[in-house]
Image (cartoon, rainbow, N blue to C red; front, side, top):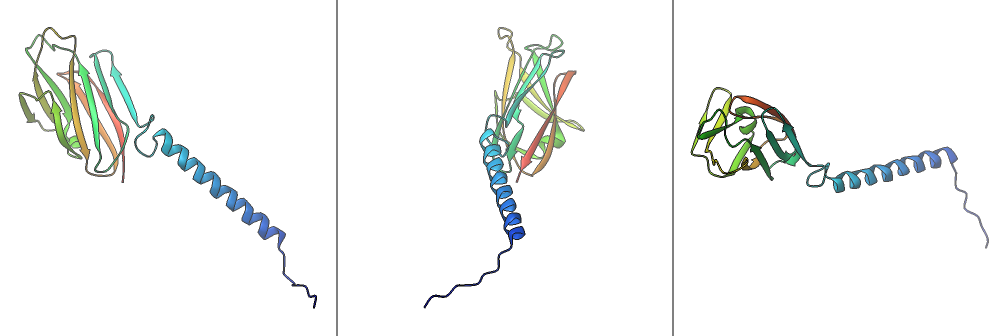
Length: 165
């Protein structure tokens, strides 16, 4: 018995379906590439550096991180500020309140909070060419985060970070 099956064909529907399928594949490909280069977490584009030549301040930090992950922030600055034997590193308090400080190397000799900043005081080492402080921070909340960082009262940097859920 030979029979034929009658099916309705809709070329317009098939064309739209193929276009949506192609768009889906392109979106998935872009998502994979974004993850590989660090736009979704760790990767070459997730870390950055900022400089302030006037105050000799250099900061390396995670531009993009995730809630709960550890991220290092390296702050490098002058060995002496205003001829003092102590160096004060200041970071805006609202940004540090969004993070949990897991460690600070070297350990500060004093830490205190002013109205809008945390001040970390370190002993100056005259023989070194610069002071390097490493913070290990664990992010607590998603969203944008802005750090204001300075050594003493000399200039400073504004760092922007995005915390993913």
